[in-house]
Image (cartoon, rainbow, N blue to C red; front, side):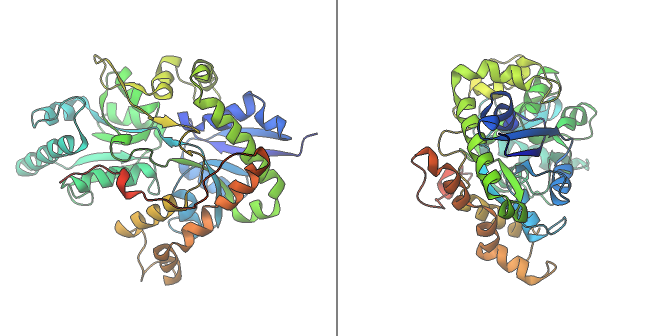
Length: 382
């Protein structure tokens, strides 16, 4: 018997896979759910359609539900995250011309983030001396892991992301064309858009973001808090279905079929050879380069990848404060900023209690803590 039909939004990225697999491999039906997936073109669309009730749940950027709960840059709509959809899967890609300039300053394929960052810093310094316009880097949304990882790398390497470069927002499916047309010089986005840039001869993958933050948080399952509270059975069933799908996605034996599923036009809709590198963690950084094995590039279930760590949400709040997206004194209500600073918004939004309650019937060993240390996962850039 169908418990309920749920409409769930997603963007065409590899990490929408657990939702696709929950439908296509029957995990949702086994939980009594009829999932209707709706492909969207931007994170703003996802945000708004969840906020006004057109979607019951959605594939979301990790920081987006926290920002919605705080009412920053959007409608104030409290949301909850009962589970994550995986870890990693992002990369920083630059134009071929910018890579040439970085090479002249010491960048080399496979170099560490500090070496690559110093090379970029020198390119920026020379451009400033020549009176050239600042380089433009794109990220997918202001409240995104991509944005914060990009800023973290730039700042750690001596590049002020608010002064030395220009940062703009572009939806993931438009990144390749924006780089090709010269509108941007680089971007941080999820797969397969980095690989497609390389395949089309437009740019080069400089860094997988796993080099900046190993096992970094990424997408989550986001729901309005009032909907989750009034539909506890559906919420739990959805978590179980997507969890089982994530386990399936992580199996090497599933990768070929996963690429076939995601290649369908109503999902990611790109060629299988553009999807496989990100799924398997074997990225080709340049059109003429050999594939590079990147351990744990995209993780769906291993390493507690689906657990909604409150420490991830607290880190997002810290980045919002660091980069001026919220302040303790000036957000429409100082209380909202104070909530972010003391972690209240993180605890209200990321809900490991819902995760544990949903998966308890499966008899799994789940994390007993709600937070963990994140600092040791970052690279050092002296």
